Image (tube, rainbow, N blue to C red; front, top):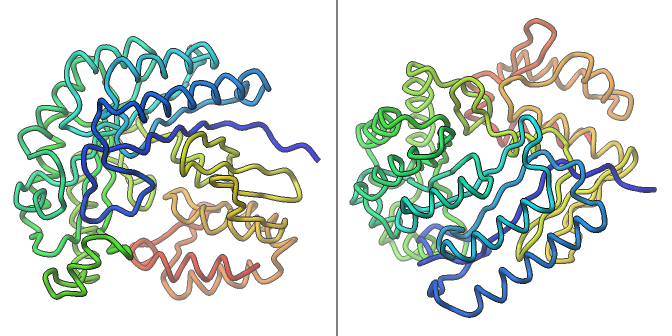
Length: 370
């Protein structure tokens, strides 16, 4: 059976100036002049053209160029890559979103102008913190001044500028987090993602925790930080539309929403995942290996779980549809409401503050329905 058309395209650039102490992504630190980058960009361009020729890009509505650090590869390579994208997709479609990730140390005014001219209309900056001591601890290759300068430079062309901020870092105070958030708001960003630090296995932070050089992550402090971020951002006019994401009205990231709403997406590049589906089956493939192979009941459970990442939640009608394949779904939702993880209002189930903060419990209960 044929699969539904792809609506989102993700392109992965697995290169950085240096690897951060918390990073377990598919990336490597490599000089920007390395010929390996040229070979990789040529490979991406071939794959984009191949996908276009096979009709796989005809329904794409969002493009996301992530990493690694896409801006690390420089203007000429990015221009060649964005040109291949521009002739393979209709970027003029109403509402088309084209996001490119950038790090402060590799973004300058010329690159901003080039990216805008080639069709990108959204920049996502990896700021993480505006506390220089924390930036050094994280192993970031930029300082706070560079980060603020990058935001201002991005605004020379881009209205839609997002920043990533990290919370729950050992030694990070609420005052430090608040200053970071207040500063990025003051500099006019339209979207903020706030991520609690996770210590991943085999990272430098993991080794530092095991040796006693770094404190364990304090989950209570992380929860307090997430509440602080919510209060500050909402007071400034940002809307929390996803568990970790806040946006000014109209600036929600459509590409990321596609991941939480069961929209098929095509991933191109090392470590990029592709999700295909039809009415009976959903599969995810990464580096030619199947990572998920879901039947219809599992698809329904996953959709309910992913829907709880979004502030709008799940409608009662959608829950009833899912209950055809998941007989215990309605009772499960009623229990989650009684326990305070969900609220039911105006015909929709949505996460409460407890549901946001205890997401693993909430998501696990829903996925277990399958």
